[in-house]
Amino acid sequence: MTEMPRAVCVIGEALIDIVRTPDATTELPGGSPANVAYGLGLLGVDTTFLTHLGDDERGRLIAEHLAGVRLAPGSQSAARTSTAAATIGATGAASYVFDLDWSLPAAASTPPARVLHTGSIASFLAPGADTVRSLLKAAEAGTIVTYDPNIRPSIIGSRDDTIGRFEAMASLASVVKLSDEDAAWLYPHLTVDEVLPQVLALGPRLAIVTLGGDGSILATRELRVEVPSAAVTVVDTIGAGDTYMASLVYSLLDIDPAVVSEAELLGMGRRAAAAAGITVSRAGADLPTLAEVEAALEALAEPEPEPDTGLETEPETGPEPVADQP
Image (cartoon, rainbow, N blue to C red; front, side):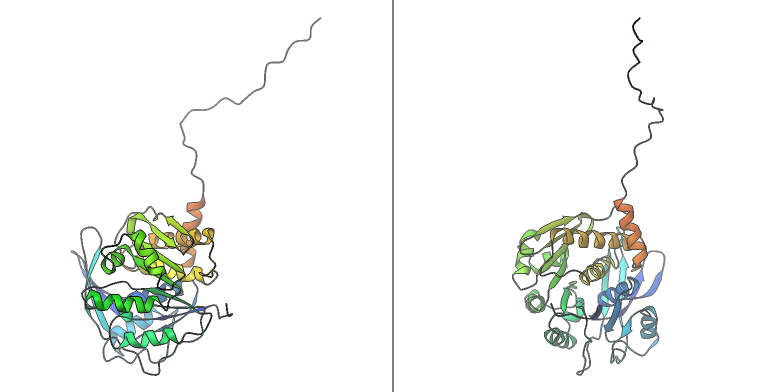
């Protein structure tokens, strides 16, 4: 693999999540690719973000939120900043209504990077989606391309059109991550175990399906591992998949998906599960820092303490000495 800078470039939408709960309405920076970029910044990764923001109050809020991430030239040229109204249900799951404008400058480009990530609405919604695909095609040799479709049926058109766009994007990727909901919507007649080889046949070297509370499956053409989710109390699921994706990208800074080992797959999955577990245990897309993820992994690695029965045990002693015979 060509030596590339230890850096990541993320392409995709940034927007304001208008979060409605029974108690209040708040406006928070969001958008799947923006969350991934933000998460990578929290993990200490050198990250550039190519997006489409307005020079308005909401756009400035997002830019301030992404203070640890560089915005690529042309990222603040939108007429307005997009929004997504999220309603939190009784289980903590979120449903969305979008107001989006997605395009990129004709001269848009990406800097050299070890990993180039994209996904979500940016890979489906015209006219920006065509530019995104062109940028992936133009990626330098040695770049690891990661893709998370993060399907939003209400805004991306018919299933037939969407499958075509998804498969075209997946064919340019080294790594593809889907949720079980993505997999079921794209391929309703296939099980998760059937979707994984279907995706790998398109060209990626690694395919992942996340299963919510049931963990995740990571597969190459030769290997398949299952990783449980973190045991946490769920507050809401906003940002969980993006946290998982940011953690995968972080791991790929040191792992080549073309020659990944079973131990590396397990390590990637466990780190991503620990990171996502932190996010779902907090309200909103409150992604973890590197220190928080490392602490969670250390806690998982610690042996469980022996149960305290409240009984004292007598020290072990050897056999009674035998008296000398006269």
